[in-house]
Structure formats: C-alpha cells, structure tokens
Length: 396
Ligand SMILES: *Cc1c(COP(=O)(O)O)cnc(C)c1O
Image (tube, helix red, strand yellow):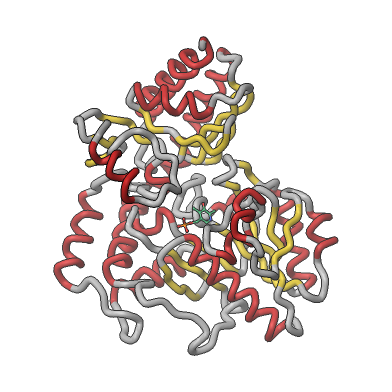
C-alpha cells in the first residue's frame, strides 16, 4: 500500500471512503497518480475543476495574485472581489453578490436571506421548503435543508425551519405553504443524488407560486452553475429567473469559493447581517475572474452543451447494447448512468484500473461531471472504458 494511504488512515478523520489512488498532478482532462499512471478525469474534483487541470490562464492568475496580495479581509475594498461580483451580475438575473468559501456557505447565506425576507416582508415567516433527494451541504442548517434522512441521523436534533416535500410535485409545495413559509429552495438538476432534472412545468409553477405567495424562489446552482448543464446557469433551461442563487464548485476553477446572488427584490441584508473572514478574498476572486474569462473566451458553456449531447448519445448507444444499464441521463456535461444491479462501485473501480475516473453517487448510479474542456475524442475514449468496465463487472 502507498505510504500516503497508510498515513491517511492513521492521521485523517475516517469520513471519506476514498478510491485507492493518490493523485499528484493534472493537466487538462488528465490526472496522474504517484506511480505515474495517467487517468482521464470525468469527475473534476466533483464538478469543480471546470477548466481542466493546470489551465495556464488560471495558474498565471493565481500565481500573479499570490505574489501581489493573498488576503486582506472584508474590512477593506478589494479589486478582484469587486471584479468577480460585476462579472456574476452581468451574467445572471441578480444584482448583488456575497462571497463565502463553499457551497454549504453559499446556501447558508441563501437561508439567511430567506429568514430576513420572512422577517421583514412576510410577518416573521422563517420556513424554507426543500425537496427529497436534494443536497445542500454539510453544515447543520444546510443538512437540515438536505432532503436525505441518512445525513441527519447522527446529528439530530436538526435545526428547525425546514419542510421537506417530494421533488417535482407542485401540489406538495402548495400544501406545505403556510404563514410561516419564507422561501422555496431546489436544485434544477439534483446532483449528489445522481443527476435528476426538475421538470420544466414544475419549475415554472414554483416560480408562479412563489410570486403569488410572496415567497423567495431560491436555486442551489452550486453544481449546475458555471456552464455545467450547457447554459451558464441551469435555470436558463427552464424559462424562469430565481430571486436567489447559490454558487460554488466551478466558480474559481478549483480554488475554494462560494457565492450567494440576489436580485434587487431579495437584497434584504443590512450592515452587520452577514460576513466572512476569508469570503471573497483576493486570491480566490482572482481565480474566479480568470475562470469566468476563460469560460467565455474558450466557449466552454457551448462546449458543455455540444460535447454533453454527444456524450449522452454515446451513452444511449451503449445502453442499447449493454443490458446491465437501466437508464442514462444528462444535461450538458452533467451525466449519469444507472445499472440494474448494484454495480456502481465495481464499475468505478474497474474503470479506475483502466485509467478512467468516475463517481458512484449510489449503489446503482455512476455520475460524470468532467472538466468543461472535454472533447468528443475524450468521450469516445471514456465510453470505450466504461463499456469494458461494465462488461468486466457484469461477468463476475
Ligand atoms: C456540492 C454541493 C453543495 C455543497 O458544497 P460544498 O462546497 O461541499 O459545501 C451544495 N449544493 C449542491 C447542489 C452541491 O452539489
């Protein structure tokens, strides 16, 4: 066994079931382990390293900013922070931005916006309606918002103020709405639970219901934002605009960052209502600015749509000739396949041995959220390995 793996087992909290590989270097869509073996990376740090690994423009921006000023706090103005906020406002339906350091923190910000909104606009309402099989983060409030009981159990009691209803069910949201309700929070494509898109009519009905009832319509675009689905934001597929957006993952190309965006209507925070020591620091925001610029300059949102469609087509062809596959799904470069038997982990391990990195989100579901620089020939290579891996594990 690698000494890094032994030391992890000695020193690190044992909270992650890691794949047996120590990754040390990356370039484009490839990463290398400590023995020099190369892998095609279809996980990208969980939908995060959207420019691929070691993109020269991102590396240069981080290097340059690190030499100039890493951190100053929000007691002062900071050029990269203001620039990234401007770029997000210009590319969204929102008018104001606050930066944190992760997806959970972005959703915490959104939940606090909902509570403040309820307090000042809806007579003290504070509840947030969320949906089953959602994922909003690992802090206590975002866990309470997450509609998966398995994450709650060890940490009960959960913070109050969240109501969980079935996904894609507008009647359930209506039935759960009362004088305590402040907001609705969903992902337009559920990521952690295995790439499950919302229905268009559902999202549109939610928007109308929130308008009628005076609720905030909040989207967790932590995974779906930054071009992942083939549009800059996932909501652009649905013909609606939210009041609040949480972002993180790909926003700074792999450097930790999170953001909550609000429209003028939802801009309810006053001085002192929210803050963060690290949030929006010059290093993270310089990386975010570089990521946004490369995304536009290299047409990566369009590439996500085009290569994502190609990938889904290839997975459909694979499904037609491989009876072990139950279903394939995808929107842009956010894709998954379900197996009939519980073989997802075996497929991930078999693919890893063959030099391909995949992610099992459940016993029957394999997820693919590659860098947005992925090419059609990368897809051909990946699908050939997926086919071989499935054939291998289906024989055993
Ligand atoms: C990953 C994810 C989060 C949590 O982000 P962290 O950076 O791990 O806190 C929240 N919501 C969605 C939709 C995610 O995919």
